[in-house]
Length: 148
Image (cartoon, rainbow, N blue to C red; front, side, top):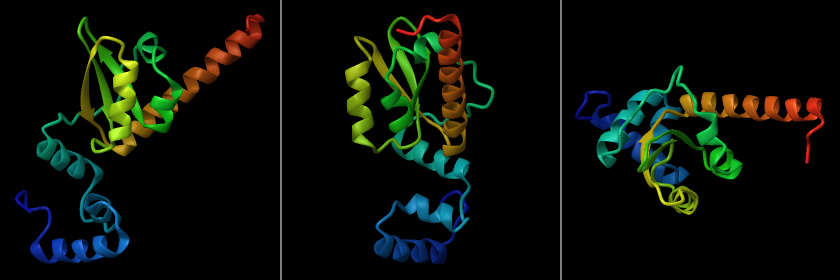
């Protein structure tokens, strides 16, 4: 409301739907096409003090990505995309999912984890690139006869 994207009546209507649907308020506002994915991500970013980033045309360090489980990436929708000597940055779509945080902590192996929020659309694009990369890697191994 503070950004002028919704008014009081819209908020109250969405809260009533939320009570019935037991869904996140943001999801309801998306379903009603009141907010865009990017607007919702910006608001959540501000509320939770986690940076929001756009990942279109992101360079992917596949050596980094391959250090993490497919479960973390595909099931939890948590994509490692940047690292330095101390921390690894992960793109996530749901910053309230404690299972994601738990799995990240198990897999970072001595690094500090940093989260950034991305839209579902950007995450789907990353996951599609990941699937293509894995399929290509498997195909190359099959062609070379080096499958374990």
